[in-house]
Image 1: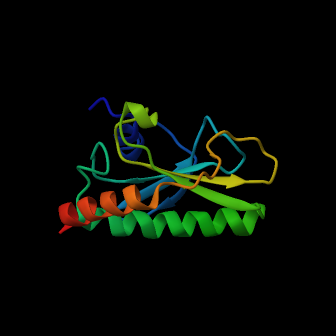
Image 2: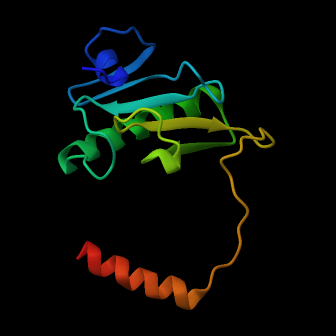
Amino acid sequence: MSCIFCKIIDGQIPCFNILDDDKTLAFMDINPVAPGHALVVPKCHTPDIDDAPAEWLGPVMASVSRVAGAVRDELSPDGINVVQANGPGAKQSVFHIHFHVIPRHLGDNLTMNWDLQPGDMGEIGKLAERLRARIG
């Protein structure tokens, strides 16, 4: 087992655990982009959203919500980002699905934001139709 998150789940690597239930584990990120940056992972190994069993995603998102609520209540941020990356192009660095819960403050200068630019409504509509057909 070479997955660092699986080793954390198994207790082989210590973590700053903040939530531990039957299906999920949440712990503090040791390379935080902001104080309170936490990670939420399922206790089953799955590399990304494409391979994640549906029955695990509900419990993971429930834990994300609980962690985000605790971060909000404890740190009073101006907002919270929940980030989940898939693949190298999205800068996924650990190939075990995980959700970042990141408290945000106005003017914190984190670079994950982008400027809003209106899209082409016709192209957006066409793409929506193709995606809807794939989803079924």
